[in-house]
Length: 204
Image (tube, rainbow, N blue to C red; front, side, top):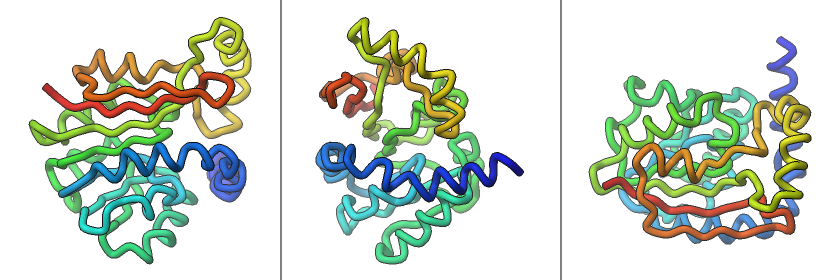
């Protein structure tokens, strides 16, 4: 019960909290999402911040496990008839009857920092992508600089419960490569703390 109330609070403050960061992140989101075509699985829809950035002719199936976030994403999707939102997590995707069995693209933005098992999530990404499908990722990662990296390690035990599971010190790029994804394009960029990274990868 306490977590449900806290998730509701996180959903309410998420967009205002991210407003200044999104001035930079939106262009990276748009650059990746404009590459999509066909059928797309969006993992971790959040409040629906990506929805306006998709091409109008793609069919998007967006999933979001947090009920308060899901409700906001459903509201955001009302203006986009090509987008459907489902209240499930990545672990349920393969057996969920209302979802396609395979996708042309999977989009995962600020998600792998939060999922309980990122290795499992990466495996699902591979399983549901078509043989020539692409995974588009925008993530913040463990800082490569020793100073900020140490700060993230120190802050993470407090940060994680305050942000409903977000980890500051994961290397999602390493996780994806270990899962078998080969980068077509990688762009590492910083917001003063070397926290963020954009990656596009595809299967062999």
